[in-house]
Amino acid sequence: MNIKLNNRKGIIALVTFLLVIVVILILVFVKPFGSNTRDRVIALLKGKPGRLQVKEGELQKLKNADLAAKYFEEHAGEEAVKKKDRKMLLQMLQYADSLGLNATDYHQKYLIDYNKNNSIANSNYESYEIENEVVFADAALSFLFDVVYGRDIQQIEFNGVDMEIDSARVSGALKKLLDKRDWHEVLDELEPKIAEYQFLKDHLNKMRHFVEAHPSIDSSVASLVDRNATVTKLQALGAIDENVKADSVTIGSFISGIKKFQLMMSVDTTGVLDKNGYALLNFPLAHRIEQVKTSLNYWRWTNRLKEKEFIFVNLPATTLRIVNRDSESDVQMRVIVGKPGTRTPSFTSYISKVITYPYWTVPYSIATKEILPKLRKSIAYLEEQNMQVLDKKGKVVDPRSVNWNAVQPRNFPYTLRQSTGCDNALGVMKFDLNNPYSIYLHDTNRRDLFGNKSRFMSHGCVRVEEPFTLAQYVLGATVDTNYLNQCLKTEKPKEFKLEKHFPVLMLYLTADVTSSGTLRFYKDIYGYEKELAKAS
Image (cartoon, rainbow, N blue to C red):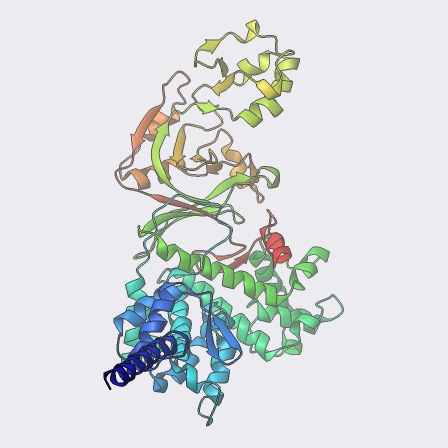
């Protein structure tokens, strides 16, 4: 009897054990519900999943799993994105194109399908409700992040400044949006307030709306014989009033429109279109819109900077301006940047110090490729250029004691240094930047070159038109211009360290605006856009 009882207890224990195993397997491999499901999804998000299953047979790639995980943790045990709010979020995401962002980047197609079909009985979505909530949150959070901080910029080759990204600000924006149900107000708070950004956004939407109203505009060809097509394209760019019928535009308005267009394209404003002018006018407007969208993203990206004030060098425009997020700055000037063969890289950095009466230490490539051949012809070149020869220990060497014909570029043992003074290639002022390219801002001994329309002339460094103005601004002190204008040839360099970090952004915008809000397009001088087009 005891044996049977023991056997029965053993069987019960075995069955209980097997049931526990089955329950564990169900919890592990079968979709749980309720709070367990939320815990499972949060754990999954923390693992940074590449894709999330949202219905049978379909996966969605998450754009920002980290941000979504934090948001769901903040809303543990509750619905983070309620069903009643999802249609509103979809409306907001479809507004992305108006801000120069692409709605397709935020799960657009899937969310539209979900919104259309999720209420159908026995739909594929029912068993994956929490996953779809995650996708809506991921779409909204990623979009809001891009609105305030912009998307990553591939063309920036080196980042030497501090970034300050506040993910809590993005999560807070979504919570406010869902509480107040006014996404327009939230977007207005997040977008940059910089005037250039606002001008670019206005131009973008005018062009977008015109192209939407004239869908075949890129298939038409502006030409000398088709005046209406020419007028329509000028209207699309804002050079002629878009409300006037093409065949009603007067000769005076037509010529004025051509001049505005030529100014916009940074070419001579003759009022007459030549072969190159028509080529610029027939350049696809869809691509012009993409250029403006790219520039808008650059301006949003500047919100990542820790500092509110920064120097902004637009390389294709060969211009420099000081930007303050909280106020307007009237400091802007022309610059000279690298030739296409020795292009100025796109990077960010801090000005570490300002040097007056700097030496110019000739870069190795220039010394060996350009100056060495001249020295072999005439040693007098060094004296003409006020240059010294230094050995590896930094001691001055008599250039006449060197057999320059025997010196080879591959093992060049000397450093060439140009002495101080107004004849120095750096002029009388240099702004040191921390970067791996030995690129910096500086004065020049050829200030007359700033009058050139094309200012791609340097070996990579950036020559500034008004170095004294720039120095006074970044140093926060008056610069002794009388002392600097004396062009003292024997003066020793003096260093002035900045009291605060001053960021410098060397960026590449082929579309930008002037201080008055005029839209300008610039030649893709370094071919970056062509490189990106090939890669995509």
